[in-house]
Length: 120
Image (cartoon, rainbow, N blue to C red; front, side, top):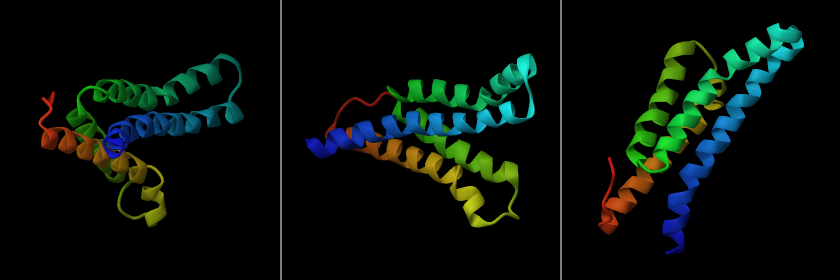
């Protein structure tokens, strides 16, 4: 039973940690701008974090949404930056997103295996 709880909670907690991690990148606007320009830039840089936060909240109940969204976000990032970068460029952002997506898949699979009604 303890293992099942870990598999349930791990993707949910890590998805929120990933959103916080992405939000840290928005802080770079304060080094370049001041005043309202900095605040507006900060809010614009937080848009991906807000989108992923909404997805994480929806994924709390619907595991398959988390699978599709986080694996999709990992793939989108790789396609967005191109294929000519060092592997670490992708691992920093796509790696955690893909891990969260795979953990949501594992959680969904576990529920299905135990016969719990799965909301898809």
